[in-house]
Length: 107
Image 1: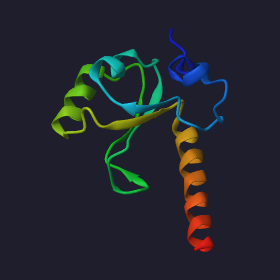
Image 2: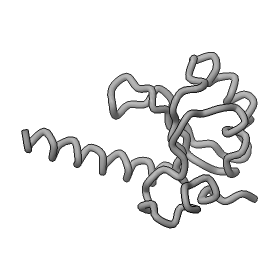
Image 3: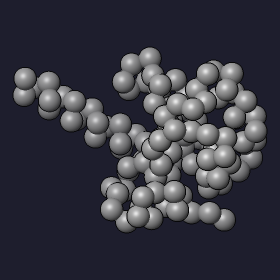
Image 4: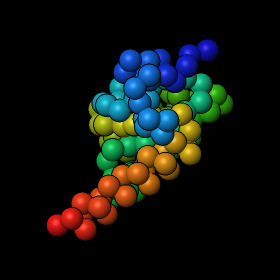
């Protein structure tokens, strides 16, 4: 079984616990290479904090069907982030919101 840290730069050694283990352009080959259980989030959004696609991918989910949905929604080739789980995604989102609020207060 593959470890999600295998997809992170430097094997994940320098990343924060809630940071994505992958962030970049999603291809079918890459989707099929991810570990059995992960949390997939598109970088395409209605607003900065509501992704067009946010899904927990577990072993039972058909990766082929998921890829067809991504293509149907025209998200293929777009940027995505992969997190170990939903909690990691929410922690990353909270951290980004804190940084955005701090920037707005500083202006």
